[in-house]
Amino acid sequence: MSTTDGGPWWRSAVIYQVYPRSFADGNGDGVGDIGGIRTHLGHLRELGVDAIWMSPWYPSPMADGGYDVADFRDIDPVFGTLAEAETLIEEAHAAGIRMIVDIVPNHISSEHPWFKAALADPAAPERELFWFRPGRGENGDQMPTDWRGEFDGTTWTRTPDGAWYLHLFTPEQPDLNWDHPAVRAEFESILRFWFDRGVDGIRIDSAALLLKDPTLPEVVADTPHPFQDLDGVHDVYRAWRRVSDSYAGDRALIGEVWMPEVERFANYLRPDELHAAFNFDLLGCAWDPTLMRESIDRTLHAHAAVGAPATWVLSNHDVTRHVTRYGREDTTFSFHNNLDGTPVDLELGTRRARAAALLSLSLPGATYIYQGEELGLWENEAIPEDQHQDPMWARRGHGRDGCRVPLPWSGDEPPFAFSTATPWLPQPPDWKGLTAQAQSGDPSSMLSLYRSAIALRRDELGLHDSAMAWIDLHPQVLAYCRGAAFACVLNLSDAPVALPDHESLLLASGPLDGDRIPPDTAVWLRMR
Ligand code: GLC
Image (cartoon, rainbow, N blue to C red; front, side, top):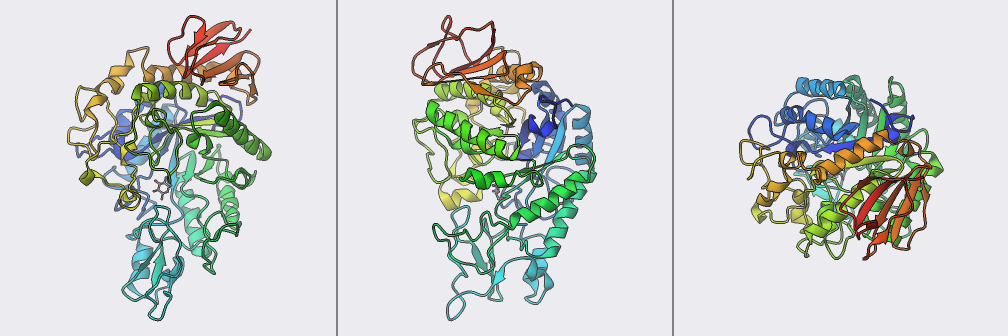
């Protein structure tokens, strides 16, 4: 398991996100599972990824696709058993692939024994592990605060005994009270449980939300936020860092930190806190040379200040797939700007996604690939109303099911060998040209592009050191070198531009126009 920059693996890894319900189904029930992942480990080895990040696979009522965890020390029967998970970790390691598991500390499932005990008896000590509060108003029938939830719903639910409990997400995800020592001790023990099983990293869900202001103030602009990014959260991660540092090997803590202020974001990456965090700045950015360059500069600058590696993410299980995003007129992404159903030019989106792959795989730092991205999958916007499963759908009128559709492996029609049964979400019949099998032998496919780019990234010395310098070629072209001999050039203008002086072409995201790079196309060059 080599690294590209000579430092610890997490500084420069290519990390592949598996959303286990949708990767591959091994037991024929229409839902992906560990058996399916084991069968297709070869796909990931051939792709050349350094690590797998496994979205939650724990026992869960699936009120939020597994991000409502009922037991962090076991595996949901729909995915398999703990023994199978241990076997997968071993097999991945044998294939040279590290494993990252997903821990969700902000909340647990309402089916977790702690919450069941807290609900059963108002005097139970477990109540202190959550945010139970009396309501406002004469009869206590008004919520304790008017906080809006992360899915745009209300954030309090009343119990039969009249008290209210806090949930920033769905009512099935009660928030934990991180001021309670038992909560802190429990999660440190959960980290140890998985580190003891050999996992190489932990992805931390909703990492900035854990602490709440106990006086429960309303959210008021320009005053400290009552439940986001409270200073005390850093003590939690300092303690976690002590846990990860106590293990041999380079175990990494990787935070999901959605935060517009880069300085606040970088605080999570100080040397005694998290090793890395997802950078969503570029993901939300329009397909625009000036804005993209600013985003890249902002990101590198913020990370350099704390000595942390940057990360690059184009898609994940929460956001519209980028083939679709980049095929729209408005190419930005934000949870609050619902573009569902606006016209999409998939050919354009695919061309840009290919170019974006060469960008994100050649910027300094670690790169995340969301399953199916390597196949060029687009968002399924045609899921029938009654088949939507994401709790965000009902609350926001925008859901995340369209990016969670099961992968097409082979064959000419759904279920494309994902399963022998009907998949839990419908696959577009038009994906028949996008199956892993259809793309495998085709040098012009998205899959071949990803395989070549990842292989080159591993071998290319220029991509091993972390320095990057812009080359000013043209105002609407992003061009930079990594070391003296490697350059990436991405044409975001609407006309072809001449290739700069170079020794040889290493890779192109699409056909060139003689010695010119067509619009929405990127190249990797060996420089003289
Ligand atoms: C994170 C997850 C998302 C989940 C939420 C609540 O943002 O990525 O899928 O719904 O946290 O756990």
